[in-house]
Amino acid sequence: SQTIHQWPATLVQPVGSPLSLECTVEGTSNPNLYWYRQAAGRGLQLLFYSVGIGQISSEVPQNLSASRPQDRQFILSSKKLLLSDSGFYLCAWVEQGGNQPQHFGDGTRLSIL
Amino acid sequence: DAKTTQPNSMESNEEEPVHLPCNHSTISGTDYIHWYRQLPSQGPEYVIHGLTSNVNNRMASLAIAEDRKSSTLILHRATLRDAAVYYCILRAPNNAGNMLTFGGGTRLMVKP
Image 1 (tube, one colour):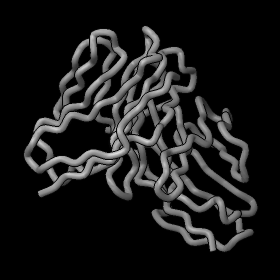
Image 2 (cartoon, helix red, strand yellow):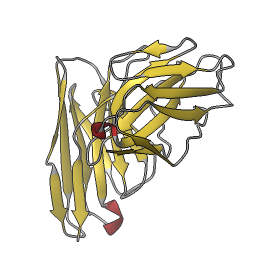
Image 3 (cartoon, chains in turn orange, cyan):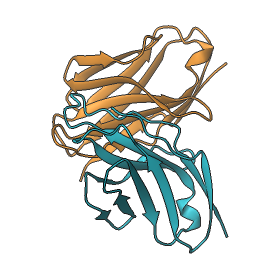
């Protein structure tokens, strides 16, 4: 069966520090991968998606970047965090093609001090 | 993807049925109607989806209006664990990235 792992679950970082959040998927191959952010009390905002290794599409301009070094690994990064980067970060995957549902990880709660 | 409109919040009593409405008057003929829910401090989880016919699964039922301009997610017997934000999302089949666009959803509160 397919599983998705996100870590860490919570993270507290100072302003200006770097960030690396990792997401891995098991039990499937060549999935589409996504990073979403959810600010406190708000809806989910799509940040990045990827349809293959090294292929990244950005949905909103921001202080963050994404990379997909392997088929089932998706990384969210920042060189210098801002206060506005605080939020709940969610990774998701879906099988390519058709109308398959997206499957979400448990999320990383990021607090910037 | 076309826009959906949902009430901000709804209340239900435990063990009673819940009907969560969604309006999507600008839906195109090929858009699928998807429902997800998000429990507190968790990622969203898929509930159900459909195109034209009503759909049932172990979690819920989806009733789609004949003109497809609205749909209703039905939880047959609400439990406390069903308290969550429910999102109604339209997804076009030619959506290259298979993306989902989340709106504000409906916050369902279940009273014991």
